[in-house]
Amino acid sequence: KAGVTQTPRYLIKTRGQQVTLSCSPISGHRSVSWYQQTPGQGLQFLFEYFSETQRNKGNFPGRFSGRQFSNSRSEMNVSTLELGDSALYLCASSSSGSAARLNEQFFGPGTRLTVL
Amino acid sequence: TQLLEQSPQFLSIQEGENLTVYCNSSSVFSSLQWYRQEPGEGPVLLVTVVTGGEVKKLKRLTFQFGDARKDSSLHITAAQTGDTGLYLCAGALATDSWGKLQFGAGTQVVVTP
Image 1 (cartoon, chains in turn purple, blue):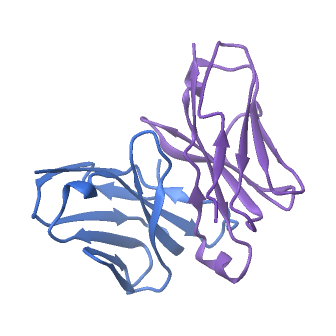
Image 2 (image 1 turned 30 degrees about the vertical axis):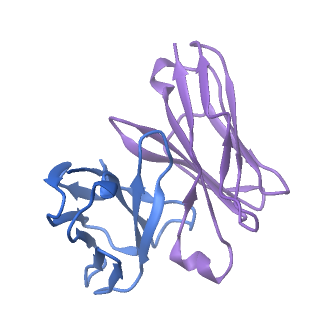
């Protein structure tokens, strides 16, 4: 079974621009979560989608948004980029079946975003 | 402020030595995971523990979940260079939806030949 895939792997943008990152979960997984990882803050939860609905949201400004499609693929968007948005953005998928109670998440390789 | 406190932050040992990483919190978690992350890659799930007092072994790695489900430890016996990486503990609060994990800051482990 293929793992979680994220595109692109690397991205360089300038302040003020906007960016869209994509995530394809493991086949059969309906929950997709997004995290931001920085050296100073570690992994911080952004939001989680399940069946095209945002089920939970972290403490990030409204510039960070996401969506999920009917095939469970997800995208996240960051508008008006700031230097502090430079980070590794990680997507994780998890099962919605009986194994869901374990809260196990399987991560993709991440998208490294650099804002200049 | 992170709900999960990991210690130590950095650990450098020689091959063959043992090491223990700790993950502590004042919150109760419904489950707790340990991940290992290598540079430029996403975290890879090592184990999940859900029952207070649970002990799981994965070859040379032993994971323990505290009786009160507030803390956990990872013990590596006879470390190898392949064990080098960032070890992260992560927990799911009972009050959060299944998709949200709280992460510790991580323990960077370096195993030298």
